[in-house]
Length: 173
Image 1: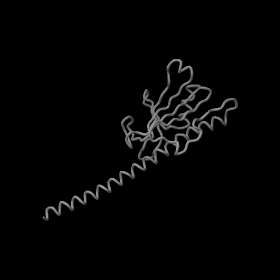
Image 2: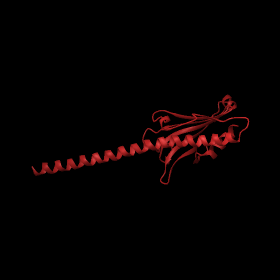
Image 3: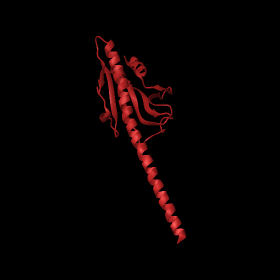
Image 4: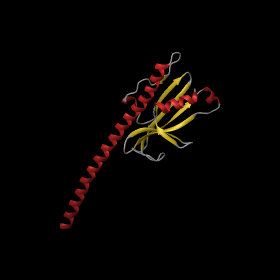
């Protein structure tokens, strides 16, 4: 009977530990979902600042941002999220979505939780069936969490920033 009592006690301890482990995992999930919403707002903010900076300097054209405003409610946890920057038919299209797992390293060596692509094109490129594309990831590095681009052709990587957007727009203007 003492053996059964000991086994029951160990089983109860394991069940209690399992409940604690589940709670930790649930909290981690909540944190990743929160980070994803923040990251979506962050990438839209970078695009909005880029568009506003350009529009302040323009006198004959206007750069359009779609959607013009993006809040937490705009983020699609399931499905694609799309931001588009358009100036006279020259388009930068930013598409991103949540990874299947909370955090992945499947397509990029640094852990990430959002993935997508930036496409740059204009009418001339479309007529030649050319759309420039670079990958983007919201990475979870030890020091910081941030958006990065990755050019699969050159293996160049860096921050998704206004400077990066200037470089892409220069290529299609």
